[in-house]
Image (cartoon, rainbow, N blue to C red; front, side):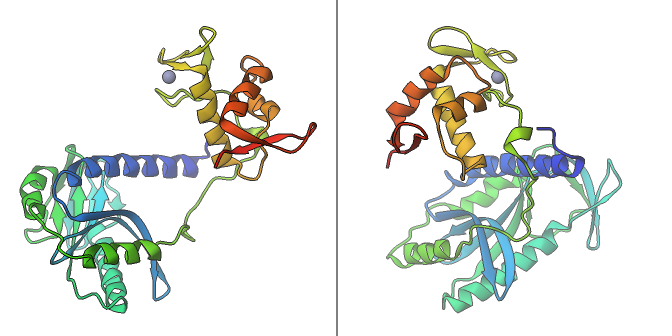
Amino acid sequence: MELAGADQKLFQYLESGYEGEKIFDGWIEPAGDGLILNDLLFVTGGSHYQMDSLYIAPQKIYLFEVKNLSGDHSTEKEEWMSCATKSEIQNPILQLKRCESLLRRQLQILKCSLPVEAYVVFVNPEFHLYHAPLHSPLIFPSQWNRFSQRLKNVRLSNGFHSKLAEKLLSLHVEKSPYERRPEFKYEDLRKGIVCGGCGRLGMEVFSKTQLICERCRHMERYKNSILRSVEEFRLLFPEKKITSEQIHNWCGNIKNSRSIQKILKENFVKVGLARGNHYEEVK
Ligand SMILES: [Zn+2]
């Protein structure tokens, strides 16, 4: 469906954040042998806070906030500005400090005395910050390689660190009260198969077993396309039942519901008798 203006903006913001986190994962994973915990949402003393990445090293915990900003920006005192739009953006250092202090409090509660070191990591090489203060917790793309040297050769000795990681993971809460999702109804969504290559709607029948994307010419096995569509359907409508008619409709009435029934049969367990049959995931 078409997203309303504010939702479209939010979507782009989330997408850019996600791309940034993927880049950061590619940086941090080979950097050292510490334990990496991603995307944690905690509540400490009634305050919610989200952390992009924690890196548990033997002597300390690194907290990384990942930013995928691009373009020229400038900072003066506590204000951050985009040079292109001349508009103020959120100061990532203030955001970082808030997370850092809440995390410290949480570690105290857990009786963990490891110190926390927190940084904002900029992953986009197209980002530039004028007047960046000299001693600031900011890491720019050109500095990552040198910074990551200090994460190398870590040896996590006993089970202390993995126990700590488990404890922290168990504190993760699933949903933020600030999370905003656009309202959607099944009837309002465009039906069809989303391309596994370019992510747009519009896979068409190419041969008996293959589909092709009308936009990017990506080819995919029919069966794989259907199974992915089932996953998308389940994510968006967890309360709806999976039937071959339902999935046939969801996939834009591609081919026929009989071929979909065959795929569902092979991959899911049939529940119920005769009319009103539906499929559930094989456990
Ligand atoms: Zn495509």
